[in-house]
Amino acid sequence: MPGHRLTAPKGPTVVTDDQEHPRAAAAFDALGVEYEKAFAASKTHRRSLEWLLARLAPGSRVLDVGSGTGRPTAETLAGAGHEVLGVDVSPVMVELAARQVPAATFRCADIRDVPLADESFDAVCVYFSLLQLDRAEQKDLVRRLVRLLRPGGHLVLATVPLDVEGVDATFMGQPVRVTSFPAQELIALAEEAGLEVLAQEASMFTPAHPDARPEPHLFLHCRRPQPPRMG
Image (cartoon, rainbow, N blue to C red; front, side):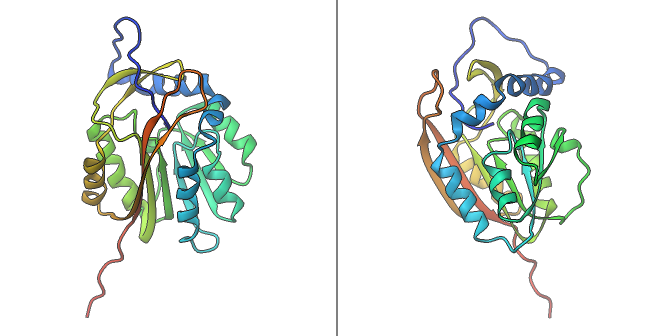
């Protein structure tokens, strides 16, 4: 979920855990292509994709977690000749992505429910797609995504680095619940999951939306280390 002005909604909002993921899908179903327009100008996102492209062998297999409308991530990677699987909980986003990026494959599902083989991807992209999971779920998912990477594979992770947990907020007019980590805790999370953080970039970005204000973004560029050689 890229970009997030954390604005408290009017009146109390009570959401159970069972409701959380349907609400996340509903929010992004409602946003549709407006979400893509709001974040299309992110130069930091583009630089992150360039960083990844420079490290991928031809025809690499890439998993895009929270693939949204398919732009810019899946479109950029598929356009460079890589095999891209995008997974998103929003049916509307998946339909848009499939239409806009026919060279990639998209599935409408919670990434945690998709059966994928360990060490089956050369890279994993996680651009702002952890923010509606609680902290334990975020840690568990990153550990699983690391297992999906081949040794030496790369994972790029972006978030809004704030010390918030279970905050009811309004995102581009839609009610969401947001959880995140401050920057150093996110780096520690990545390292504890078995990643080397090779590079990071922090920036301020203002989405192209009437309600938007500048917000912090953090991009981590990581690698799953090769196992040590024996003998």
